[in-house]
Length: 129
Image (tube, rainbow, N blue to C red; front, side):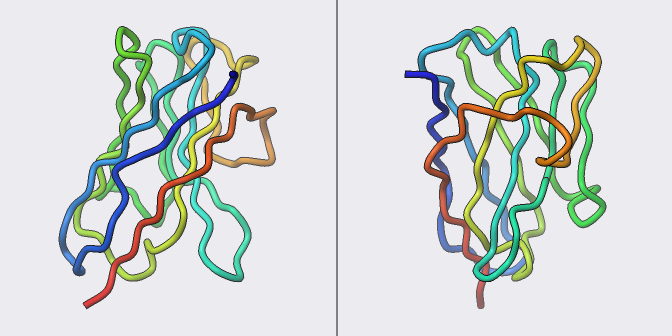
């Protein structure tokens, strides 16, 4: 099945950290750029971070710059999102998706700009005191 499986979400307090994992199922992750996205209740899905196929280039939304990091282990078919100094506005369901048309040194953090596919079920992140 051509899909991602996300995990690692949870309930944390402001200032704490989480690491999300995204495992590719049914395809070889090396051939795809990968993006992390989130959706809060009542809001549209927004881009968070993305990483190019070999992992040499990453991009982040302004709202998470300096706090989040994205990296990949192609041997494990997995992409990670390290989230530090979490804030209540980071609350939402986090998804990952794959872009098979991206060049080797390209990714786009905006979900509507690229043909992202293989969306998983998401993992809930709640930041609350």
